[in-house]
Length: 329
Image (cartoon, helix red, strand yellow):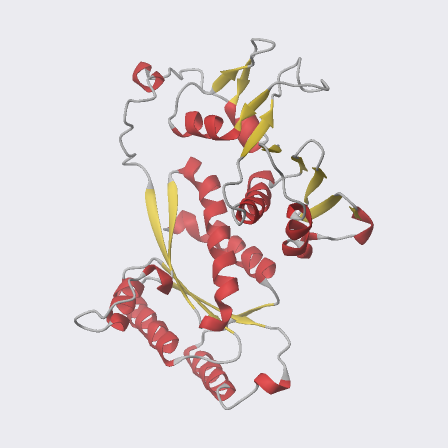
C-alpha cells in the first residue's frame, strides 16, 4: 500500500507513527532513519517514508495482514488528520501477472476497491495496464477468496447509485465493556481491535457491536444514567470488565447486573481481566482495598479472573476466547 500526499507532506508523520507503534518493534536493528519493520502475531510490516516523493510505503507478509494493516493505517490517518486540510490517498498496487513484479505497477485507489467490495459487485477488477481481472479480495485482504462456480453478479449491483438492502443474515453479538476512566487508552485500543475483527467476521455473517459508557449521551436520564448502563449490560451477549488499581462502585454494579442476568437467562458470558502492570507507590491509596475485596468476591463465586500485561496480551487472550465462543452464540 502507498500513502500519497497531494501538495505537501509534513515532516514527522513517520516518526510519530513509529513512537505510537513502538510495542511492535521486536528488533531495534529493524529501525533506520526513514524506515521500520514491525511484527505482530507472526505478521511483519515494513514502513518506509520518502519525503521527496511525498509518500509512505507499506508492505506486509504473514497470516494476519488485514488486522495489522488496520492498526497501522488507523494510526497513520489519525496523525495525518491532525494537519489541517492535508490531502492524501491510499493506493494499492495491482497483483496481476504484468504488475506483480513490475517497477511501475498500476495502482488502485483503496477507497474505490473497498466500496466495490462492500457493494458485492463482481469479485474482480480490471487492471488498466494488462486488462487482466484481479480478485478484489487479493488486493484488499492480501489473499484470494475462491469464487463459487455458480456465482452470478447481480446486474442491479453494477449501478453504484442503486441502494443495497441490509443483509438479514448478519448476526449481531453485543459486547459490553466496563472499566474505570484510568483504563481509557486500553478501551480505545480494544475498540480498534473489535473493528478489525469485524472486517474478518463479516464474511461469516457476524457483527460485533461493542458498547462502552462513552456511547451514552452525557445527560440525565429520568431513571438515572446508571440504569441505562445496567439495561445495556442485561441486553448484552458478552460482558467484559477491566480492572487495574481499583474497582469502582458502578463497575461493580454492572458486574452484579451481568451476573444476575446470567443466572436468570444463561447470558451474558462474563469475562474479567486484571491489568498486571507496575504501579507507582504514589498512586497506591485506600482504593486498592476495593480491588482485593472484589477478587475475594470472585473467588467465592468460583469465577477465576484473567490477568493481562498490556493491550496486545488482552487482545490475544480475548481473541482466543472469541474463536471458541462464537460458534455457541
